[in-house]
Image (tube, rainbow, N blue to C red; front, side):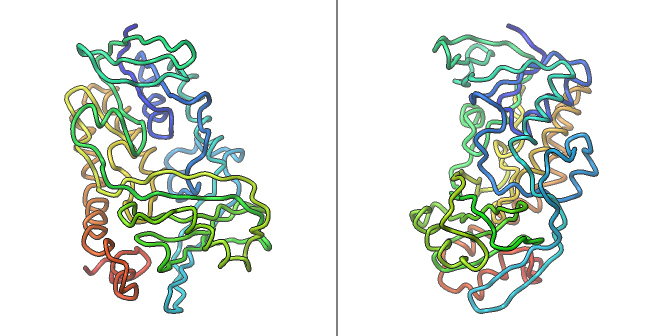
Length: 343
């Protein structure tokens, strides 16, 4: 089995890379360990509206549930701070699946239930999870798009070791919301709680720095008791959780291996925002690699994201490893406050 490019991971980053490569005539294999693309959903499902301007083909009405206008923050000291945050709440499963479908329509080959094991003699080694048999695939280039705990990153050098862990439930809203709600609390250390509306329901969750060794589901249960004015916590419609990279960008070009999305640390290590960055880095990798300029992928990706993401990672390390003076820490580490940009 031989390809121009093998993309490992069929989330937004990997599928976008495969789509861009296939459009340029590359022979592409897109693999994922899951049995279907986009499931399970492990995020809060918000994307900024600017992404739809860049990739209108990714945003037919079927993939987004509602528009939102602002992000409203509730602090422990009683201050409420709003900031513009126009965007979409997605049907994330459908969003991911659509991008993969577009890649396949352009000629990419999609192989599911296929687990990446490592590299051997310049080839990628996989296991077919249906048959439990291993096989090797050769390619000129490999793209690691396998998420926050990327095996591709681990097999090729530096990788993320510090994470936030999240827990989230879907519950009915008592009244419709048009804004994203963010809550900072002492029992959600190194992170925050959220209510993100999706029509009649909402994603309600918490994200906690793993270094605090706090049970994330216990924290979520406490948070649910606090937000009963907004949501019906007696009707849990779904549960999920996941990991957010907390260290900043890792080297994205490693010989003939490129890292995109969470696999390369292209996720904001404080807010957890990662879908847009995944799509953008996937596009950069696919376009530059498809044009025979892999080194320009690294240059473009770092020019675009390095300052903002690594600055946030440094703030996390310097301010958020203690959670005992929230009135000082939160304004220095959250994008809605002027202090974030001064320090």
